[in-house]
Image (cartoon, rainbow, N blue to C red; front, side):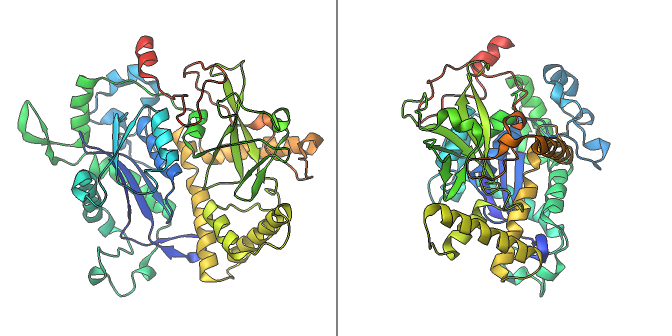
Length: 463
């Protein structure tokens, strides 16, 4: 079961903006395990729900500073047997790795969006929407939110209470934790506070009088159901992002008054894709719209296709992080006074000015909140580097040195409009995973993606 709620505590965003964050969790009903959790500033998107899907299927690495007792090898989980099946469990935290068959969600826009449903289809997961306005239909996750509130949130500084009658005089003034710090504490509490806590609803058939913890219940069930590791790489993460299907024009790709262009598109401008509708598959991250990924045919690769990163043509003009939420705020405030290309340039200039004003502590409260959410969302995106075993600092240093060193000697990185592209083809992230079905060009249909990250039949043949 998946659901989101506004946390009953204030956190400090950039520039001192204080706000209540949103918590989205995935709960396994059979074991009461909190499989994954994402803490965001207000504005949870479908890409956050897709992040939950990826988190629950891969082992959670131990974070720096965590006690050794939180490692899986020191828990009740049959670590040695599982390690022989999945080498990624070495050094992992004591959080179960669960591949769901069905996900129960409410009628929220995030969970019924076409992007989230497509992400579930790519992983072979069924989506079951609960009836609207029916809390008991997903009572397990609602009760878990209540337990999180009483067991964890009420002990956090700037606790707001469930209603204003339980709130102090100046709860906002007591906020001391940033969103990243609170998310780190919550991830640690899940392992040491929730997964090791006995639940009255968890009983073993051979020991009905003994209440079990989520980890103990998972250890019992994994012996019955088995364990099959699901390999996920960076290309799989791209497939879980929201998707658009459209043409590659002479000027590149245009999404919501943002034009993306790169020399890798030269061979495909004005051409039809191998798909039945003739449109190209484009994935984007609403929390980092500075670039998109285009799926292009590559017969020499095992999957028959590859992902190419295409930057925004004005990414050198706007170097500070921003989100789609920030862009939509500008779209509503900046009037159009020229053609489409000039209007996009005006929006980019207005975006840079807004981010610079907010960074200097000026601007309205609304502008400060918009900029703070953008920087916080950009920082939260580093969780994918942790998820796949690469530290974000190392990755940033690696990209920064290699990319900008090559830019000095490469004059072909200039796009058609004269702007400089910092994402050449040689540095587009590629997946290290060699799994996945080999797919012929032209197979995918526009409505239901045919490329699957995990094929149970193929995986069973390998094992």
